[in-house]
Image (cartoon, helix red, strand yellow):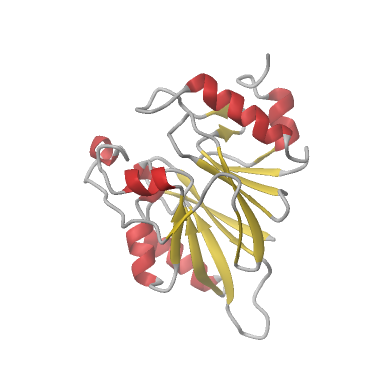
Length: 215
């Protein structure tokens, strides 16, 4: 599995592009985009430059800095499917709940074409995925595990050396920390942690050194 990460928008959110392998023989390779938070034209250009074709958009949660590019990207790739939890789908259409009214113009994305449940497994872009619900930053937030759990797209649950905020509407800081600990403990120490902001890390490193996760 390969990944490309773009830092997009004023809040420097990470948009991750995942795919099984590089293009061969001039053919495009399907890809998954996790959290297209802004700059859909730039994301689209990177997809095409890499010889990829968008198959699926995954949303970890509904906050505006993670969903702002959804509508533009789906316009560029009308055959792509939007997938997330039921709660993220609901909140994505409500500018009050997705916090877009706090940041600028209201954002309303269309309902997800596929609703994912906690623990659900699925295939996309030639890769095996599992959705793991880790609420606390926002209700219904999902972490997406790919390639046998070797890659964890963690949204705003855990970062390199930190965790997400638990003081937004519907947040729960202690529940978030407990959920992150369970998630990371279930992964190989070498599993890549690809967060919604900031640099990548490893599951074992975060369990051992993240000050928010230490007892």
